[in-house]
Image (cartoon, rainbow over all chains, first blue to last red; front, side):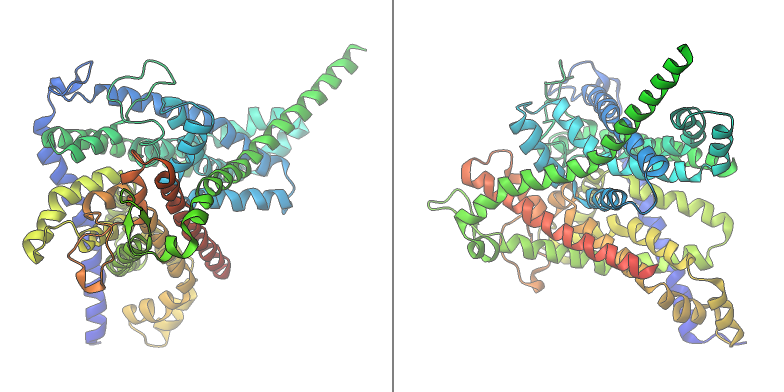
Length: 273
Length: 294
């Protein structure tokens, strides 16, 4: 059978567009790696930042602190909320529907709006100032829908026979949840947490007016500090340290690639189980 | 007696934890409530003081003049331009790539491309913005002239950034179409392409629309990457001035929030409110489309 010209055109377009998508990614990652790796020097990891070494170590430490603090707030709330929605609430409950609508609304809010809210509420109203604490709480609200949704899906994927078995052996609802259901759902929850870490590491707009841009390791939770992404934003808008910007981009990309690999392997563990 | 005691304690613990779980579920509602209350309380008074029409349709934004002017119309139009541009670049490429992944791609290749698209979704917006500064801005400057920081540059960059959203949502929409449709079309003599583009894609229409709407939401809300490449002049541009710079709603907030005081600061929060309302409308449209798809 002869192929019609329109079919040929559509086939060519499909292949072309897929090729463009991959080429853009390869070019972006490749360009930044090639330009940035020569600038990764020991001085970039000096203990304290000054305008001579432009060290990214304080930013790296601040990033780790921010991730830890945000998860500490968001994970319990997110997981407990999902437990309520899946294990306790009746199906089609009005409250469940309301929670679902609000979580979807939360997930769609742009990060700059979170930044404005964080500034208004945590920085000004609660008087925390530009601080690690204010930044982390803002991010905690931002990742809450992600944690809730992934936990909900993993809890729903646990077969009901597990629960019936536990109840049959005389376990209460609470014990069933914590001893049987949660362990079985943990790889999925973990994948959600890893994705949340990725969002925190990449976030700038929500942090710049909540955690601030001080380039040193914050001395207390109420001190300001910049994460890696903010560090990179500051460097590239100053325009003085292009080399170090490239190097910071390389570190950020490496973190993101690592996080994606982790999330994929967690997802694979669920699939093979 | 003792047994009775443990049973009581257990019942107490059960109901206490149930309450904890319930309160956690309410946290999301509380968060949305707080966000609405604080944003609107912070922004609405400024809109009142400036005047709704002067604020939304005023063409001049000059906060440090005496008297100051707070018109965000140029920024609303700016957001509209870059979002439209992003859709023009991102949607066709995204849809064709999604068709490729769902219906054309050989399996080994799929295993390589899918993680690549997830990676594209995970790259931080500052890295995109930086890539825009070092690659796209010079490219646009050398190819089309102007200084490179322009509506066009921001549109291309945003088009790339919304690709993963468009691709993933469209791909699952196409996969949700029953195979019988494809087989029926082929049995009637349609070619593979005809069956995919003439039957499968129209059947997945509401999913594809949802993908576009989600992409619009991403593009309007994107801040840092756009701010880094768009030039940020708070001027009203005509569509044929796509090689000139423009400022979006998001960029307006992030650029001036650092030093704004008084009414200027409130006007920036009000800019955030306008953005928030746009996003809520887009979300409503998205959930309506999703419900239609089911």
